[in-house]
Length: 182
Image (cartoon, rainbow, N blue to C red; front, top):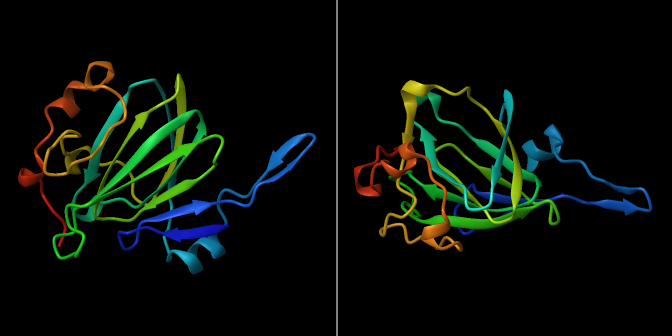
């Protein structure tokens, strides 16, 4: 696998070595020892999956405190724009974000460490999104930041009129009101 450091320290794009043949393809999507030596030790405890249709925007979500989560995300079917926002107050990239297109074709994965908000927008007719987390969901620790906060300047490539967003995400806090990580 190729581990690519993004412009934000700790956030990585991971490109697998795909082995195609007449039958289809094969690749290793996760290998603990290799991941740990290239990214760091992360004890993933749960795998999650969601299915969404074109225009669905989920995020920007995070969990605070002891319930914060590191995530390793990928798309099994379709295509999404995936975004991570740095919420680490002491980071030189505090408030900055990284966007990456993840698809069934490019098979890229995106590692988002603790201390980040995360969201994605479905760009295909349908997307199946899979992710590993290192901490269980804790509703009492769940937080959200508005996807369209002008301070973040995230460029979502689907017109606002075509976005499908939950009421909870529409009511999320602005970045300036968020609870940050130290």
